[in-house]
Length: 275
Image (cartoon, rainbow, N blue to C red; front, side, top):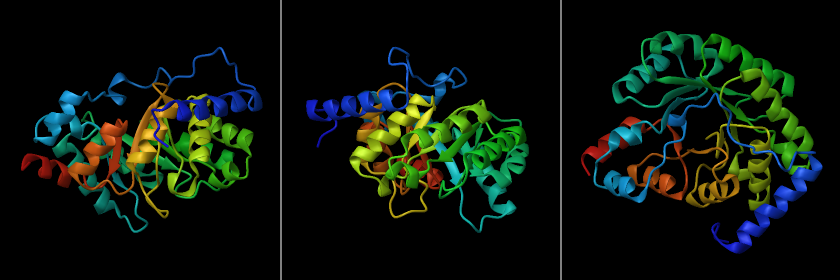
C-alpha cells in the first residue's frame, strides 16, 4: 500500500475514530506537539534543499537533523566525551545517551547550542509506567532537553491501547520537555504502526521514532512514509536504526523524517563533502 493514497487515508481515519472512542479522546481538540518544542525541532526540507544535499550543499542543515547517538551496552565515560566532542565539532542538533550519562554529557555540552536527549525504558519498554516516568524526571533534572521513550510493544500488540496511552502520558507529564516515542517498527504490523503513532499523538508527544536499534530491524523508507502519513503535521518523525550513509539519510528526509538518530553523523557529513 502506498501511504499517500485514498485507501491508506481511509485506514488511518478508521483507526483514528476507533481510538478516539476507546481512549475517550476529545475529537474536536487539536493534538499537536507541545509548546515546549522549538520550531527548530521540526525543520522542513523542500525538494530544492534535498537536491542541494545530494550535491554536497546545505550540509549544515543536514547536521541539524542529527541526534548523535551512543547507546551501546559497553559505552564508557570516555566514549561519551568523544561523542560530545564530535557533536560540538559537527554542530549536530543533539547528543542522545543512556540516562546514566546525562550529567556527564550536560557538563561537556554546557556552553554550546547542542541539545541533550536521554533514552527512557530502553531498549525493551517493558517496565512499569511509574519506572519510566521517574527515569524521565531524573534525566530532565540531570540536564536532558528531550526524552526518547520506548513504547510498551507487548501491550500494544495485545490490544491494551488504553494502557499504552497512559504509559506515554505518564512520561510526557513527568518530562515537561519534548518526548519522542520509539515504536519499534520492525516488530509491528502496518496497522499496529498506525495505532502506535495515533496513540502517541493523542498523548501529545513531540516525535514518533522508528527504532531502538537493538531489535531485528531499523528505519525503512516505507515506515517513515507511513508514520508521516499517520501523524501529518501533528508531530515530528524520527528515523533511527541503520541510517549510516548520505543516501539513506536523504531518503529518510524525502520520505517524511525531520530528525535522524545515528552514530554515523560525522561519516555522513564527510561523504556529503565529497559528493
